[in-house]
Length: 340
Image (tube, rainbow, N blue to C red):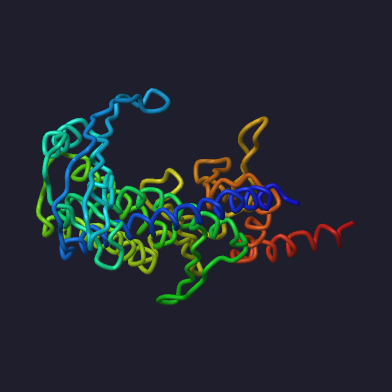
């Protein structure tokens, strides 16, 4: 098994269970939000607070101080005495000091409070029904893990692509080769991820903002992802990442450290070789070698760094075929063989 295939297998081994966990996390979080908003229609009965405590504890791995508001209350539905311990379905922010302390003051010991319950399941009760803006943003918390998982799948898809699968098209009589470019899907996920990270700042704040603000933030996430993907798609169509061939020149894109395109006369091209770096962990990338007008030769990278030498060589050979270098080298070698 090649190194790249082993790396892909290890990534998939991590991604598959991680995707299942993230999917469960997303579903559970969304379900809690739905129940929180749905609880606004719950009927209520009088109840009594029997336990009201504010506990402080240390977060794991030096994460600082966290707080837990513990409450128990009794209530009666249809002659049946019941006991509950839930304040809200969405409880993420209640682990911060200010929200937890506010809950302890709002629901003190022995207080008479209304208890809201699910008419279909009276044992399912809470003290604070209805949703707000922060509740609607609650799915952004697992959304960060969703973004990381999607990035992993995009990278896995890129690793599965064979290096010789070079997109090629003709425009205005010139051949365009897209040797390497990040796919719009990956750029879109990055864009949405940045927006989610910014939106989480609103969720972690102590303020209670309206639902309209939360809807605007969610819309910004989808717009940011869609806009980033669209811009990358338009850039791909424009040929900004392409190696462009015509009868006279090869135009190298402003990538791989180049700030502008480099025009190379075809007759000055010598070959496509492999550039190497590293001693223990080696990496390879196709490099265009051509004659410099001032004398000697010059090297320009034409592909990405790869840890798999076979894949890098396959890409170099594919580029030689596209540039017709193999054909030229074979013609140059023929007279030499006949002279012998």
